[in-house]
Image (cartoon, rainbow, N blue to C red; front, side, top):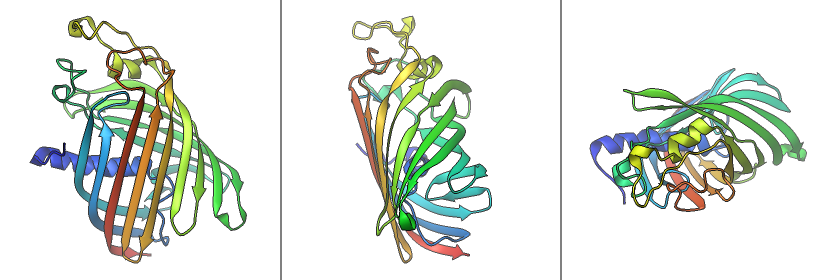
Length: 273
């Protein structure tokens, strides 16, 4: 169900923006300029958390912003601050975001503490494995290692680390598109934050559970986007396979897979080279 309260609509604005920066990959292309500003709308449908059998839909205005500086770039690859940048190898800072979960809205977590928004930040190394003549196809190996912090502005705490290497195929044609796939390994602190059930929250249907660190499933991500004159359209989808994940037996895991998808449309209002 789509929520339209004022506070949640404002939250949806930031969530939609963060989601598209996190999943955009290389797909949001256009003529390279120093600065572009625009405005549109975005929508996304996400599970409450990986393994949840409930979802939440977000619809909000979408502020399109693209900046191309020497080291800082906010563009088709999301937000990067390059520490090292060459054509066949680069290192940047990788950022991802997970939206909050209100336990009152989730049957499995009823009576448990809410999950605050989680921001992951850390270095990502990218190796160019193959590039076709003309650069239409690129194959890269990407190695992001990120530390995670959960915060609701009043309470901020470290919740662990995430290592999620992946192979990315970039196709630069009429519609630029990315397909990536890879596993993830997450430490016990992070898994505990989402999947642990402490004694105080045990019920007849929710037994005690202590999550472990280790294999956290695998995922396939698709994103594509296109610029037509002063208009831009982007799409993304991600499938997570949780079979074999170390937290698979948690009573909070109701599905062995997760799927999320979204779309955004913007009008480019301002651009300078």
